[in-house]
Length: 252
Ligand code: NAP
Image (cartoon, rainbow, N blue to C red; front, side, top):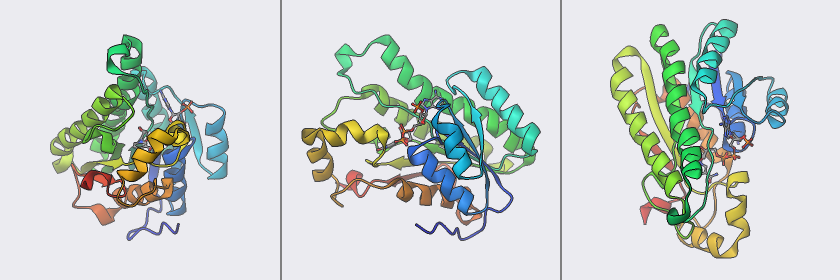
């Protein structure tokens, strides 16, 4: 895909969490192609440096569920680059377990990375942007934040993503007059490591395709294109929006 944005990203510093692979990696690639200096943040110390090397990007390892690591991350990036213009808060996990069997640990694990870590990143990177008087934050939610998936059980995941959508709206309202835009992207099923299990189970996969009007899963590049749009000044009147990228799944 050619990612040329309507307005260029030259000179912008873009932080991409969960950038070692999947949607994060493709978005990091897109932002890099559009002229941004990309910083990949990920817990995966094996894939992270490889991903960064491919994109002439920087790699900062972090477990984003630890707020002290996020605070240090923001300080380290600021010290090295002097400004932070774009934050794509995207790292996340899915756990498929019937709710009556979901343990405290499983619940907390999902909420910690999918929701709490997104808040820590918004707060710490947002503080830098508020001081600058400008910045664009993009949070990865999911169509699961507005519908409940079928047939796989994933109540913690769905709940975390609904939280991301509301967190996004709340911050957008608070920070709009101070120059910081906050939007979320809600992908439908996208072909990555996260969906590998479901795509290999014919009973799940059949439902996914049947319930998607376009009859296919999406490519990470089809989400990355929206990240570029929200990162750029072409989306200057967008804040608090949740852009659903799902091949029509939520239309039915
Ligand atoms: P992915 O391929 O599994 O990539 C997620 C990345 O996040 C991995 O590199 C992972 O590291 C990293 N990560 C996990 N926990 C972390 C932590 N505590 N701190 C820092 N990094 C951490 O997933 P994806 O499919 O690209 O999904 C990216 C985002 O899109 C997620 O928020 C997901 O919920 C959302 N989403 C995906 C889909 C889909 O169909 N794929 C649909 C809707 C929304 P490890 O490799 O070490 O785990």
